[in-house]
Length: 68
Image (cartoon, rainbow, N blue to C red; front, side, top):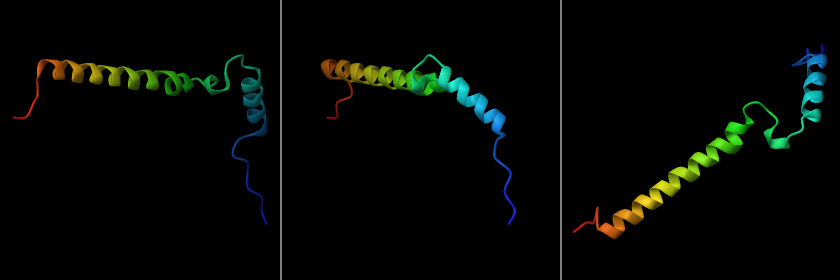
């Protein structure tokens, strides 16, 4: 049986472990692109839903879009 080469060199793995263990941020915000997935996407979803709710209330109050 031959052993498979590691996916990543051990030195790189230890370097990444040290970086993530010493970062002084919350665990879910440690990566460089984690702020996009943890902050920006939920804010965009909230903003679009508030806009659509506001537009629906405006349309209902002015009778726009009613079927006869």
